[in-house]
Length: 369
Image 1 (tube, helix red, strand yellow):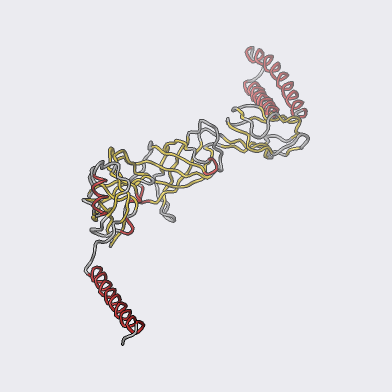
Image 2 (image 1 turned 180 degrees about the vertical axis):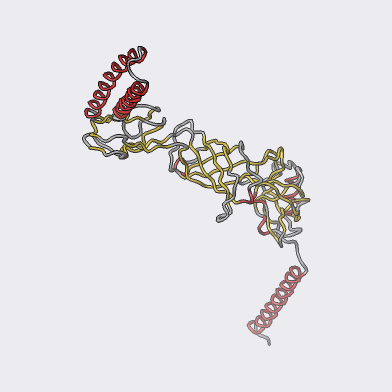
């Protein structure tokens, strides 16, 4: 007689063996599907189309901003400083009095020279009458004439030196520095003020000689200064040196900068861009879309849900945009984001294609199928 417990053990053993074999068969089938090359997953990308607009060829350089004209004002006569009429930062005009020196001694010397001159002028008048009557010789008369002219020159010199006690601005501009104080006794040629003209401000660029044929006077320029943020100032190429420095291989370009706001100051460090050529209505794409592969410059163009390598020829670059000369049309949809993982024929899922309209749905659907 067979017991119930003895019957259950063989049945359970057979059931486990059957399930194990079924699992092995299923695993082999799945592995075989992968090995047979099932559909690869679509790579999500963002696409866009090229735009058109003017693009410029630009030479960029850096240079400190300088004043076109500046003057170191010195004392033309010695003396004690009696009065200072301007301070640093003040705008002055050419000929304006900046300070006054003690001029008493020079005033007395001028008055003395003036008195001597008047006396000799009276003597000259009397001797002129005597000469006409033949009482004095021509030589004696000319001697008096020469003495009178010498005294006149002495008087004018004394008058000029007295005028130098008023220290005047030789140019219009801004008082950049004051070197004197009231009560100082100045020697001859002592520095008193430094005046800087802010119109125009200039930047001197030292440009490599390979750019010589590209730059010329009259070209437009822009200038930016880190200290003033994103403010852009306009300028123009005023002059180009006709010689190249053999030691550095550069030539000097003078850019005059227009600063209607008065915010620029000499000594600031500027970044200068000179526009030397323009391509009108050029085809442009973002630089971030470009891929460098095997020495080729290319983009990935999306067609029927797949990415295809498209070699292109590029031209001018302005900021984040680059000109496409050949290899791409206005209607081509190229990958803007996600191209790093692509290869020829990769399936893609377009996630933003607003330019292509309903084709977005088709591409996305094809990628999922």
